[in-house]
Length: 237
Image 1 (cartoon, helix red, strand yellow):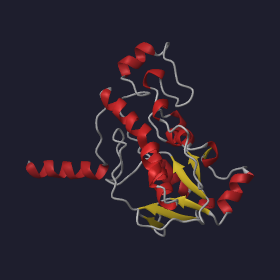
Image 2 (cartoon, helix red, strand yellow; image 1 turned 120 degrees about the vertical axis):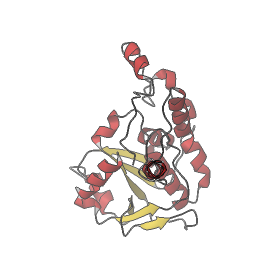
Image 3 (spheres, one colour; image 1 turned 45 degrees about the vertical axis):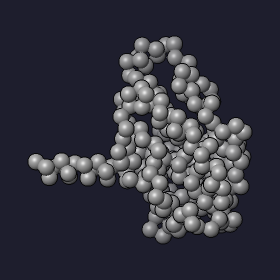
Image 4 (cartoon, helix red, strand yellow; image 1 turned 60 degrees about the horizontal axis):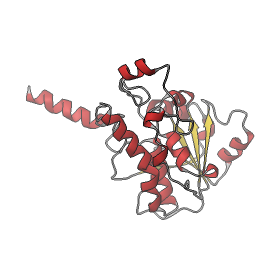
């Protein structure tokens, strides 16, 4: 889940640069980034295979965003460890997804009131085989959950970590808000007791942010930090 606050940056390039090179820009077929800022060299090779299968329930508008992390997660995991379903309604007419949503071995990564907390002190969970993640902005993810009754009966888990997001080119709703690739990576590391997968899976995210910052993108604070800074400034007046 990622925040919808975007900068004036398009496809990882400065706007003026983008306008001048629209007709000649070549896009990488794998990471779907302009070739000059391709991230494929940072993708794990071989791709990481996990026991738990990640199911990204992706809002249709997310595919249009070039500064997104769901694609990096999809590339970092083995083909049979990650699957993407693009829609606003789930399961729709997909019989296989319907079975997954109804399975007792499926969990939804969502911060509901009854969600079980995961920390790096939590025990691995061999009962979870499928992990659903709502992939979109925070507002889109909330609406997707609200408008899909099929998700309401699925057991929920949520992360409770001290880590702050490395996705510094997007504003997170809270200091501990994480991007799609981050929540998936940390959840898999905890549930499968595989902390060694964190560094390689997050490497392309770090590269993405470095490229954005090098092209002049601002380093974004989370919304709660921004609010504290604004409050401090008001108190100084």
